[in-house]
Length: 135
Image (cartoon, rainbow, N blue to C red):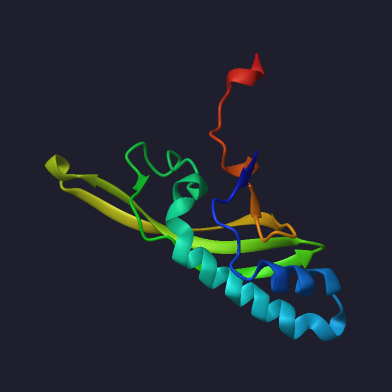
């Protein structure tokens, strides 16, 4: 499932120019662009963070994500494709049983950038798992 991010990159024209050049001497510009995208995503993460949380039931049926996702890095892959590494804390809380546990989930998501600076995330791996299609 492809998910279009609600906000385009602020310097879309400059970003596309860097992406379209993709030359060895352009590595510094690509690294700088990756840092800019990571900062942009961190500032706007609340627009997509819930879509990036996988099913936590393998930890516990009570495990959930509240808030506080952190973008660790963005890396260039090829063409107009990037990968964003991120982490978030999961929580299990059941006060009546005295249960309060936390942990950190590290994950990544691929996305592409178009000429207008729009980000298109590939959320296929984040879809809810189901056994419905097994019959």
